[in-house]
Length: 401
Image 1: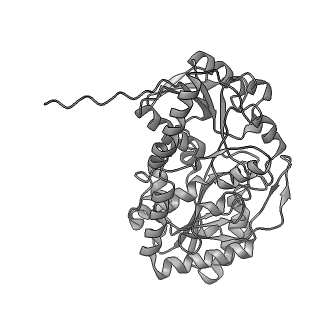
Image 2: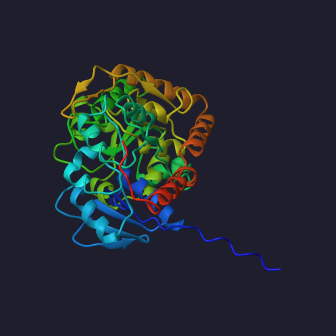
Image 3: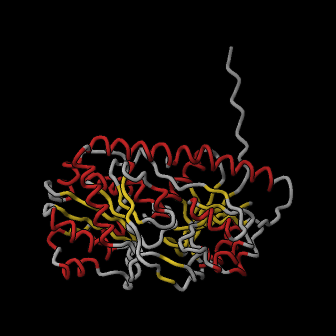
């Protein structure tokens, strides 16, 4: 007897997503790629607006129609006009929402921000725009709690990574391929470098690394910077100023900016012994979970979303922070304390030296269990979209706070 045909999935909700174009290599782009390609595979009609990465005309990449940026540099006008052209039922944005024009947001029938909160408290410019949201999604518990304290309900959906891409491989082979010293205890940082003081903590990392070298002259540190701006921090020059340039390595800037993909980043991470992420402010840190997925422990700052990313004493450590700095966003950010950062680097060094296989196993299992993009799409995103489809395609949409 023939088996009955599987019931066809109901996938009518038309989705448009505004963020970095999914091939550009930024953290937002990588997550956008991992999410949208899976939604397309599941049958959802999905389009993307690549406000960073595409100009001039629409194109199709990986089966996804991608619209270009228009006049507004962060896609504020594009989300209105392209969503009309695509006949989108819902508009998602994955970005810092103060970059969006409230006049455009109020024109959207169903806008759902998937947003970071990276100041303490949540800035007024964020809260004001959230009044135009149909639903609010946050990607850290810190962000969810900050909004709750201000009277906004949000649903938590953590960012995730693909453990089939980011996975352990041979360290010696990766170092040989990248021209890195085999005998070094190698730290690494992969991050944007667009401002000074450096949001990602480059100065604190180098200061702490200099202290680390006093007891571990075999130490080395690798930098991979992308989205570099003239306003960024002079990493190479500061390493030279500190007298540690001979233990500081860099991925070629042209390749790092334009030619890298996730598979190659996976090779870099596998060349490391441990990863540094002492950011002053972070709505979520994708590279720390990618590093752990490769079996590498991570040192983070103890502020905002970062404590949520590791298991202290098992998959990494948290340093303490300095006095906060009040920014133009009207919230605080917190530089890492250099002495504390150095202390936690020493602890991670000892963890790796004492039991490298166990540390690698713990890191990998932590990410597969808690930050697996395949699990998150199945258990969080598809149920959310199904719920939205039931709401939006059977009754008029209403904005809710």
